[in-house]
Image (cartoon, rainbow, N blue to C red; front, side):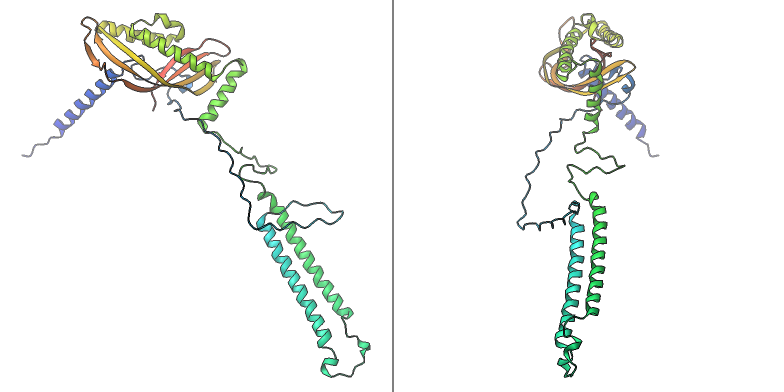
Length: 344
């Protein structure tokens, strides 16, 4: 009978996954346990907005002067109102019909002159007296006038149609022309993350005009170092005023657990690479801000009796990225850490 190795293989795979999970969670033993904890209000169960470097608006490229000079627009007739220049497509269409009409009119005039000069009675040997006229007659003038009026009104109608369409083609991509009943988007739209951040900051400043990004980043950095030091000492009491009640309870419970295990989490050579504000919002009378912290440190566990390293490394630093959320009652009040979240 052929034996199946699926049960043994599945058991080995689960064992390996459990080992990797335990090793990873133990190696990330700094404050917050390398996981997500605390409350972010209504955003608790949504991933924090990841940090993106602010976009720098590009300098406009210099305009390229065409080598062929543009045809100047005809001057408006005296007493008439100046019209905006039609778009290139409309202008080319109008010029075509003007050329066509002018050519047709010129051909008719030339034909009539030719007929009058060379197709008259003298040209055919007729003896009619010159009283019949050798030039353009009244009928010819009426025909030419009628054709001219038709061409004029046709061109005028085409030009009015082109001018009615002109607003849709005017302007540039950088500065669209507003049209009645149509809401034009701004030239430079911020990404949704930055748009949300700017909106949140403006709301917070309504009740705290002194709020600024540099101050909150400095506050977050100070709190980060103080909490890591308190965590390494397994006592969060010195930083209780910088934590919400929930965060204080969670972190202190973890510190008590370390004491019961007889372990100390050593955090050394902490180097913070960047601190960036990524989110700001208000809800239920509370201000919220989220700060992204990118840092590296030596993070290892020692036995509090022997001092031997039982987890981690004293030589290989751990690089990590975390999002710390702070909250306070709206207005110029003290910020407190309410959540530590790992990036999605």
